[in-house]
Length: 259
Image (tube, rainbow, N blue to C red; front, side, top):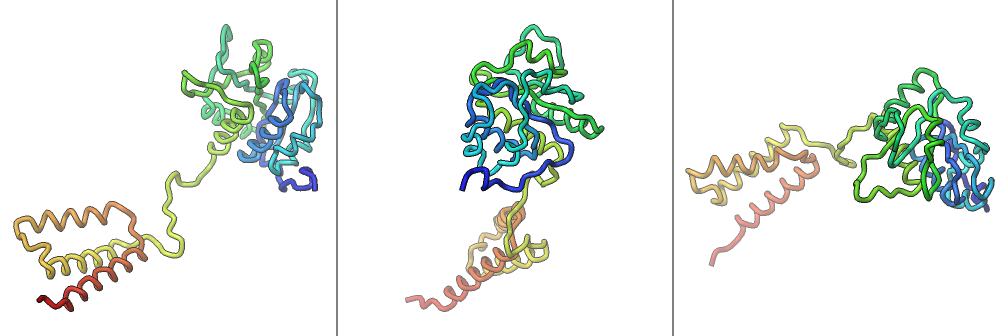
């Protein structure tokens, strides 16, 4: 079975930006770009003057199932031809020089592109060759430049990584998932009532065993215990387990024979 036979059922999602690879050099990188695009919900891929021509079987082998993106690739001789049907074009650039254009971060560009596509306009993002990136003449075709704010001492990205950053920001621009969730599986977060019931159980047993016998320090010790359990999202299952632990400890203490 070939890579083309194993592709996932990937389809365009809304009016998404076109990814345009300018003079890409390796089929492996084109395949990796398709994989990165699929992760971020991008679908349309165009190649400008690929060094080794197109198609190249190695691209499908590197796409990890993003075959429909590669199947739909179009090839163009020039950037002007590749962007002719678009309304706005962004260009990625590590070190823009002698160019007067808006420069956005990947996050800022994703927000801008979402706004553009939301108005029914079509847009694209230019990515340069692996070795040297886009030239000034290439960037002259773009309305805006995109620069990633990375470690200034080391800003080296390969082609698929550069596309992945933009694909991620494009996706996250409308992602509604909470930035933090608690995986509870079959249980749930305990209510304050359930937590209060457990803390009462714990405090009674700590009194009975003598742990809280220092009366002047008792209020502070009880508060510290309460803070420990109140600051986290303790689950109902965890409380049931702790109830059992306390009950067994109390049973063992009461049944212990002192010699």
